[in-house]
Image (cartoon, rainbow, N blue to C red; front, side):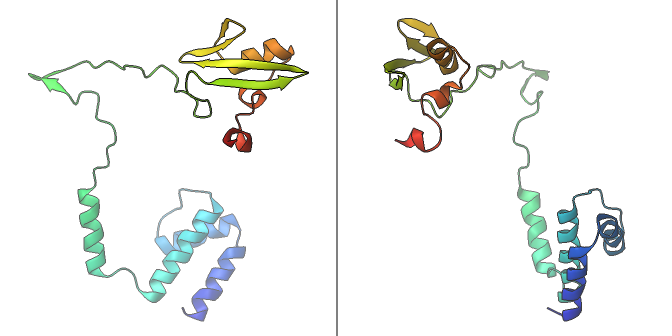
Length: 167
């Protein structure tokens, strides 16, 4: 790469946000829509290199355009996508409102144990909630509060976080 371009990039590295926005306007002939300093620096540096070294070949541009045309950018179908005889069909949301099972928790049927002040606390994991001393609890935190009398993160109390969870 040319030394002049490298020197210009080094000047940009030390430039203020306002001077980067001004340089962006010079290089791209449009105002910058962002105030993210690192993003502006990278975009300007890339453009200066492209101008000095040459941009993409016409063949590469055509191929990129073909790929972009083939890409199905929509991830979710529009609400009125499914129609019968011209009338949109109402769909139900299913279990969208139900919270997903926490990955840190073991499968239902597993037993969690914890030593606390000389006692061994045994908790059974259920499909919906937990069982401790023949009572149903909706969360491990509720059990931790019942045992200790103070607020605890239940997952942390039973050692299901970080390296403890892997043991």
